[in-house]
Length: 164
Image (cartoon, rainbow, N blue to C red; front, side, top):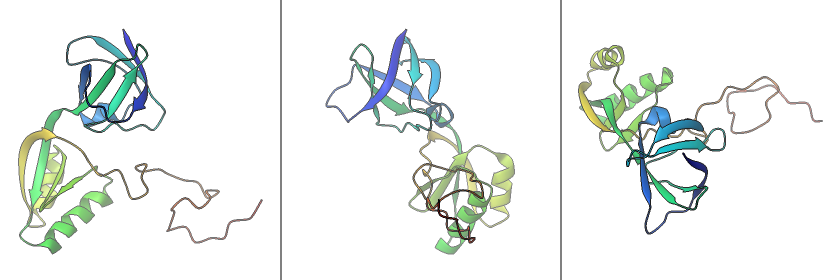
């Protein structure tokens, strides 16, 4: 089995491709297969999110390019920027990963969310496409924090922190 433990910069060529849906590109430990069918084990730093176009280096020196696999999505479009912003707000309020494009929002297929957006005057259709949702406002996606958290982009915590 091919073992991959590190990322590498974009390369001019690659030896293999790894096509994964977003759900699996969020896992730092994963046993899967390359596009060629060869088994591969990913042992990446915890919290790693792979994006289509990322490159990985295997333990035997091969370069592997990551592909965002097509998956079942919903695409919402609205008649105005205000309605699109409102739709994005309501998806974000539900902690739904969202890909934002010019005039559209994409999210993993969910008929309940689609009906909610239709109720907000959005048109929603099912599509199959690669999914590259936003990473989150502070770069690492969504994290919960305790009352002992130190400043790390937390803008909604107002109590003073005791200095150590």
